[in-house]
Image (cartoon, rainbow, N blue to C red; front, side, top):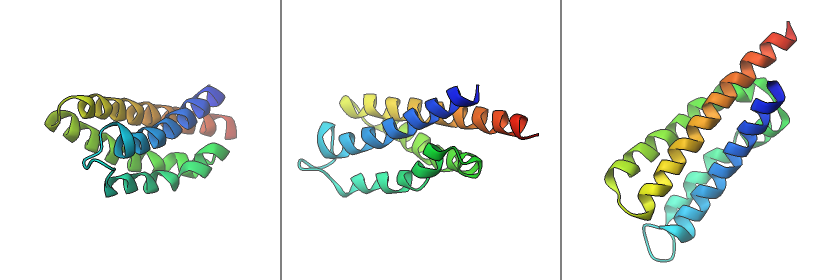
Length: 114
């Protein structure tokens, strides 16, 4: 369970990073040649190496950060139309997958460390 949740967490975080980059640079940017909103990817890089290495502490605080992306996805899914709405729904899904997998990882890690 621990390896599976670790893999899912890593995949969801990396997919969210690529989604945010593609969204703001090419797929549906706010401005024609991209926008400064692409900088929203930078906070996602903070937990990346800890998640990839399986650090429990990172898995404990990273879901709080990812809930900000969930909130952004909800707002943009509600307020925008077209491609941006679908990208926002994908952002919501990836952030929820990460949070669920991270919680599962922490529980499994605690059980194995006892």
